[in-house]
Length: 432
View 1 (cartoon, rainbow, N blue to C red):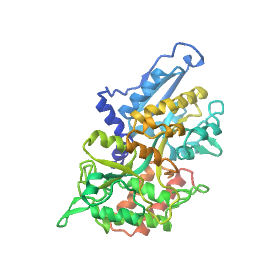
View 2: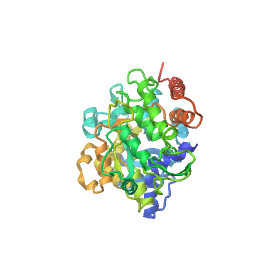
View 3: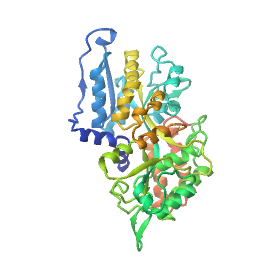
View 4: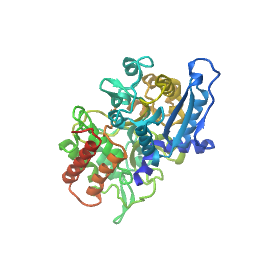
């Protein structure tokens, strides 16, 4: 259950903080607006839309719905803890929402259940989608030659420096690390102890390691964690072993962090860690929750010796149910939510990176150098492609725990985790 808390904080934390800072009401009960002024075909159509809840995101979506000139939107913002269970049951029963939000990497699971409608050419052709959106944001949305969703909430995984602590340690906070060894040595230099007691982490990794193990093994393989052709797990082989060994060795051998050190606090935010590795959205989180923190955002060096992309990313998507009575109207709503104008709002107020390629050149959105670094990181990003969400996370977190907390050797822990992930895929019908 701890991961659910962490997961929502990383993906949605800046949204909730932004809402609190703005003094918004935070009401998120099911809301429905009347049809527009009756002009056009959309006025008599109602489209149901579900997504997991955050106060700020719910407010943004409702604002979009209120401004929308097409169909009426019946919007429900559902608590994260029950979202997937409620959505899955409703879709299975044939009475689910027309539009719903899914992590991009589990779209194939819903496709294989026959629950998704493809994006119709009349709304947006495959060529138009590929021209409009960044490659990393749509790579997992194309299945058997058709697109089944449009992207939202794009996050790259980035390295954050505490610039003041860097300068105090004689390090240059303006420079990216060229190699893993460079990062390792900097983390050691940033670590402080009082006798055997840790007083400053060189790298905050123990409290939330998943960003690292999502990123490092993904980038070590040409097609990511999962084989594009077979859906088999890739990471129980030498590049994966090396990535897991280097990550866990930071704690076990180098002592740059400890599971016991300030375990319930944000070490980086309170100035007790020289670095942390987080989703882009934390640029906004730290600006609002730690306004005196002097930090900068960087691309991390590759963990494994060989790497196939500079940065890993995660993203969500908006999909349409195959049982939706008016799929074209539903897709029109989705294209509105993912339009350039809408994405300006998501980017400025929602703590996410744009998936629309045209916005990457918009300098007005990048006045903050940390935001500009996030925009630049999208170039060549590779999506985290595990075929599971919380279920796959639990398996991968167990690998970390077995190595770091229980002293299991890296290869045995990784092999066991990979076999469990294969079993998960087989239960889902995604792997023979």
